[in-house]
View (cartoon, rainbow, N blue to C red):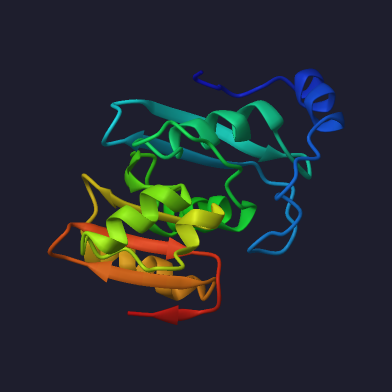
Length: 179
């Protein structure tokens, strides 16, 4: 499942098939510089370091692997993660100038999982962006929550929630807001 840098020839082959539903939008202006993420799922112990966008296209295999890492760990249900969230994570990584993996607390949540968390008073929003594949809760081993929050806020690319008691920052690609 670990995707690595691809040769130009492989990228061209992948690019032809890289039209993935839910990946039409982007949180930043088009640039041909590769975009990458490094993720560690705190619930499953799985990790991934991958280039998910290069030469003007999302890389289907990398996106598939990211979707798996960010799946609902309660049910193993997977949904395509919105490109805007991937780009926010990539830009936060760039802002912090780090290759360290983001420790994922929550990515996609099925509506059933989200409703259970909501009813149990676990802090989930009733109509959470997590159920749409548009949000990620995360932290970092080598960067403080304040650094993560401030980097995400500086991007002005969506919602940013700061949860110091629970030890994570929430980012989503909804309207720009903070809490």
